[in-house]
Length: 115
Image 1 (tube, one colour):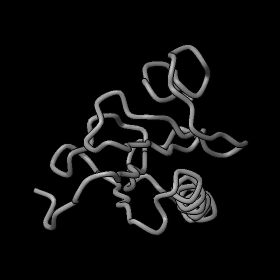
Image 2: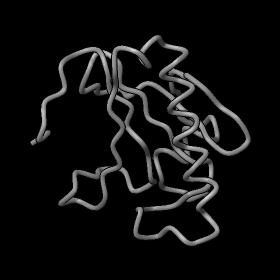
Image 3: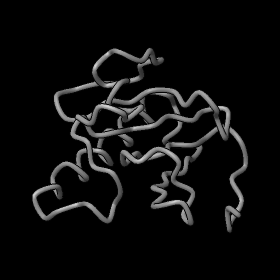
Image 4: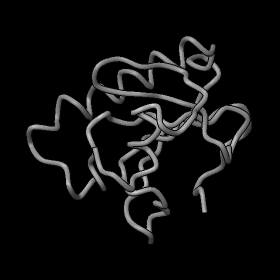
């Protein structure tokens, strides 16, 4: 956990969030500035700043993040209608909070390229 990280604060309970799912490895919550009617962020409890900071030992954790995204999508009834998952990396990739997080977006037509 990193002291000045917003998402570490959410995981610790110091910063409030609207919980969607949690287990011993990941925490998922609704984005406070949603880009779609459904916008959930799925984060590891471990602080990892960017995808560039992933190590081989994180492979099971990243797999867990995607498994949780699938579960949340099913629980919210999105698995059949469709949804998008996105990781942003560094400022040029749109990352604003430097604690990796998977966006799960649904509830509107999602165009490609996202822009």
